[in-house]
Length: 446
Image (tube, rainbow, N blue to C red; front, side):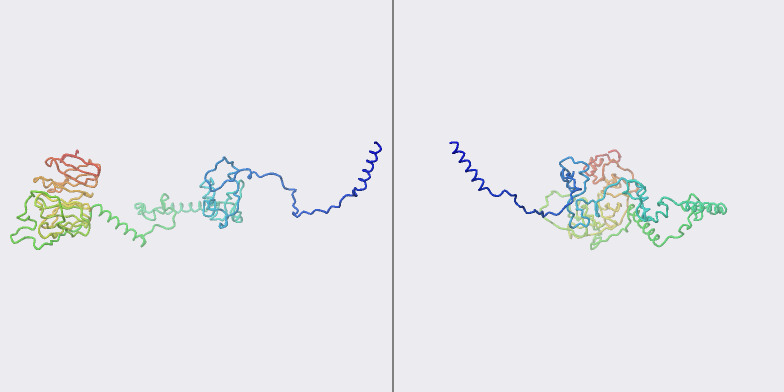
């Protein structure tokens, strides 16, 4: 058996030896790279610090993390703005020319360098951290030895001292005339006196005003006169026009006399149900109307057109007379007890007392303030007492017989708008805006 196995193994060995090919090494083709040759000897295998942090949008006003100083002040990265010449986006600008940073510079130093640059053409470099660095015309800088506008050259200082000594010597030699000493407002005195602001001036004061100065002075004087006239109340000629057929009838009765068939008072009062008549004649608004006392056959109206008109009520309904004497709108009107006279208060700061029949002004009163309301004492024996509520928080009382102010009520919180007599005409009820006062007539205490 051993011989058979040996024979079999020898046969397999010969078969394997004859079937194996030649074991010579293969021939390989050389490889080529398409990438360009790059010198990487100076490159460092390190990641930039900016890539390790989150980018910050400069337009945002808040960040969601705690950035460091390097992150906040890192240069702006990214593509330039396609339509901006300097490449800065609109959100990065704080000036129309770009971005301007704040700098802590003393105002004196800034003014010195600013004016020096505009005069000489050079200035200190504000961007330089240290050293005497300058920008601008360095040749002029070297020629002027680096002086600024606040540094006076030495030769200029000597020149000024010499001129001052020369002027002082001339003053001591010439002295001052007696006439100049007595009249220190003359040009010569002002130029020679050292304490005068014109001392040392080569040209004296202006002797005459120019045309422009004269025109300005005249305009100023005119405005001042107009203002003074407005405060005192402009005076206008008192005029009146009668529009009726005749001032007296065939019996000699006045046109203001009530008709014989008119009652002194109505028996009944009715709620208005329809329009009876419209009186038209004022060119502007009507501020107040008053019926003729007792009979009401005439109605008096005060207009914003500076006119007061009286109208017929029972018959024609036409305007009977126009009263003109105020330069501004009429604020309030008031009849006396018998209707023969009435008061008017205007925004021209005048109070006028008129005769109803003739239209003549009996007297005029004024305190320089605007009267808002005028009233006469309702008692028949005290019809000479006039009360007027003024814009200066006062009620002024006049005696129309003498034209003098007899009492002032000044404990008010605002301008007085209405005055009402109560308690048998012994007390006053004065109404202001959101306030009313109750006081005794003739007493300043309210």
